[in-house]
Length: 196
Image 1 (tube, one colour):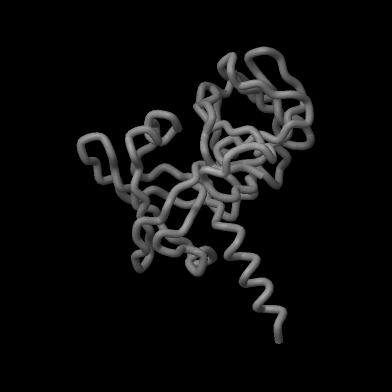
Image 2 (cartoon, rainbow, N blue to C red; image 1 turned 120 degrees about the vertical axis):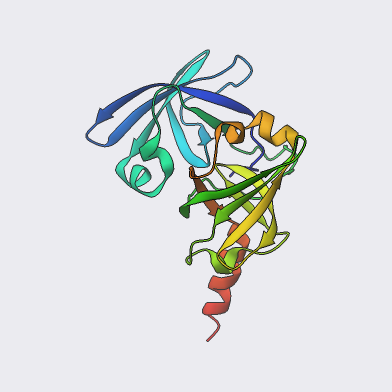
C-alpha cells in the first residue's frame, strides 16, 4: 500500500530479459533505502526488490506487468517515480494507492501557467465511472486530485512542487501514463453489485 506521495526519482540503469520478463535495475540517491522483499512503487507499478546495494535495487517485471503497464516502453536512463510502501506510523498525506495499474492513458493537452499547469488525459471507457471531480487518482504513482471531468477526458492541476519532485517535468502531450483509480470506488461498486 502506498500514498502516492513520491519520495524520489530513480534512473533505469539496465534491462535484462529473462524467461519471466525483465530484471530492471534502478539507481537512486543515498536517502532512498530498501531491503530484499520491499514493495516499491515505480511509476505507480508495485514491484518487489530482489537485490539491492547502497545506491540501486533490482526488481523482476513479469510479462503480465509488461503487458498491462507503461513498463513495456521503459528504457535505460528513463526516470521513474519511486515510493516505498506505507508504514503504519506514516502520515497518510495522499490516498490509498496499491500499485495495481488499471490501465494506461494518454496526455492530450498541457496548459502551462507561470509555474503550475493543468494536464488533460484521455478518459478510457473502463475507468469513466471511477473518475469523480475532486476525487483521487494515481497517475504514474502520483496521488492527484481530479480537477474536472469532461466528456472523454479529465483534468488534473499540478503545483510546481509536484512537477519538480516527480517525472511529470519530463512528460509531454502524447506520452502514456499508468492509471490507478481510487480503490474505494471499486469496493463500493463491488458491494452494491452483490446486494441483489
